[in-house]
Length: 96
Image 1 (cartoon, rainbow, N blue to C red):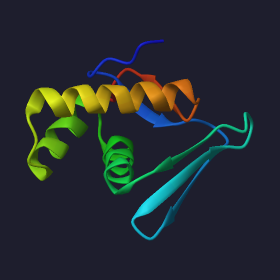
Image 2: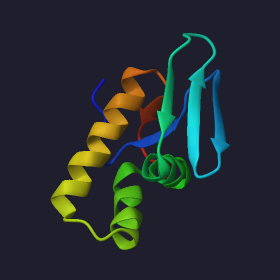
Image 3: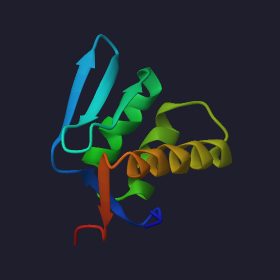
Image 4: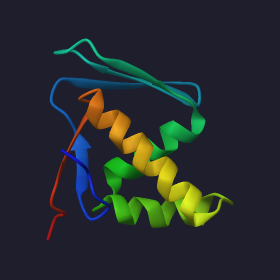
C-alpha cells in the first residue's frame, strides 16, 4: 500500500522503539525486521508519530530544517516507504 501525504501513520503492532543517545533502533518483534535511525531519521520518526498526517509532519520538519521543500518531501516519502516496507508503521486516513 502506498502512503500518501494526507495519510496518518502509526507504529505497527509488536514494534519497539529505543533511543540510544540521539539515534534510535526500531524492531518489529513479530517479523524480526529492524532499522537503525540516525539523528534526522529519529526526528522524522518522532514527528511522524505525533502528527495527524504525513503532510503535517512534513510542515513541521520543513520549519525545523534548512532544506529545499522538494528534497524534504522526497526524503520523507522515501523514509515512510522504507518504514512500511519493514512493517514498522501502518497508514490510514487522518484523524478527524
